[in-house]
Amino acid sequence: MKARRYEVVYIFDSTLEEAEINRRLERFHALLRTEACPEPVTDVNHWGKRTLAYPIKRRETGYYVVVKFETEPQVLGEFERAIKLDEGVLRHLIVIDEGAMPAAIRIEEVAEEEEEELELDEEEEEEVASEVREESEG
Image (cartoon, rainbow, N blue to C red; front, top):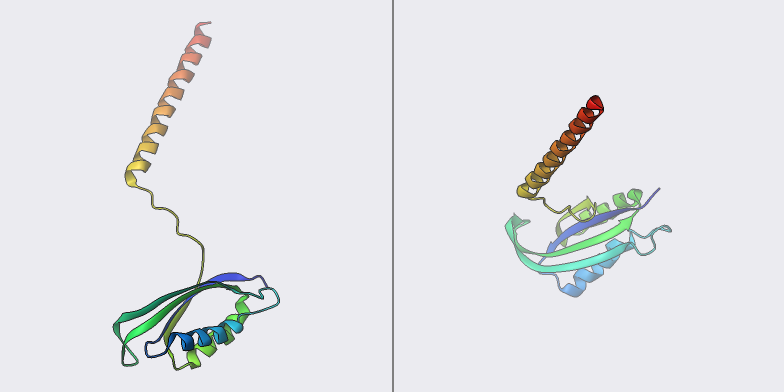
């Protein structure tokens, strides 16, 4: 099966030391290794301690880590099971990484492009009409 790109956001208990969080991450990421993807993790971004929007497991703050990785889909079951069993992980979310978001297009730019296309269409119509007149006169 073909490997896919994923992104996982972990919210760890903020009482854990960063060294302990890194050990847990290593343990989780070892489960992602396959013959097709010997080094699955492509990016690790520690956001650090943040205040939660609402309490989770009676905690007001959490330590956020965002990780991008590439692996085969059948490996995700055991990976997610290990995360769920870890008491130090308050929440997690795994999503398919579809790459960079497309750039937003301003409505004014779209309107200008449509206007230019209409002007070109009118010019083409005039040219065709003049050619038809010349042929019918000639």
